[in-house]
Length: 208
Image 1 (cartoon, one colour):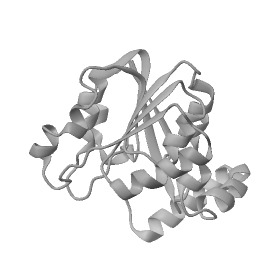
Image 2 (cartoon, helix red, strand yellow; image 1 turned 135 degrees about the vertical axis):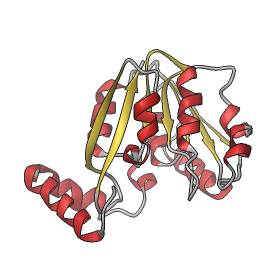
Image 3 (cartoon, one colour; image 1 turned 45 degrees about the vertical axis):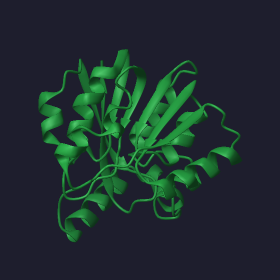
Image 4 (cartoon, rainbow, N blue to C red; image 1 turned 120 degrees about the vertical axis):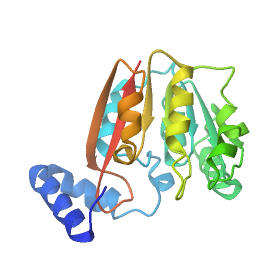
């Protein structure tokens, strides 16, 4: 989240002081593990993960813009998972982990895009892969650098979520425009520590 290193440390200390039962989890899964794939967990806040544990139904269909531990997490719980990835090497790690878990309901497609060119991303196959489909759960967590691509992804994705479904936005504090202009019925904000990260993060879940 925003702030200098001191502010981030103070924010983390405040969170753990208010949630002492999370200290063990923080030591084990936040700073004690190198990759969300290793944990088979989404790279979002633990508070949002806990919500999803109760929310996901075995009949749910899922699409992810950006995969990883989330692919394995959803694959173990949902009916079908479409993972839209932009990096071949990363997709190969996800595929290997999926095979180890014998997940047969996961489909991974590698559709690269230029992370520095918003206009070309708006026309990319990566973004438009879902144009003829709809899903119960959509995760917006694709790769970006200096140019914010996730708002464009979100506004496209929310047109493809089933009634009663959700759209998940990681690092949601970065995207005030999404909070302001979405079409959701309501929004849930989940602020907490998360897997394989040293500080506190925020994940938003939009309900349709």
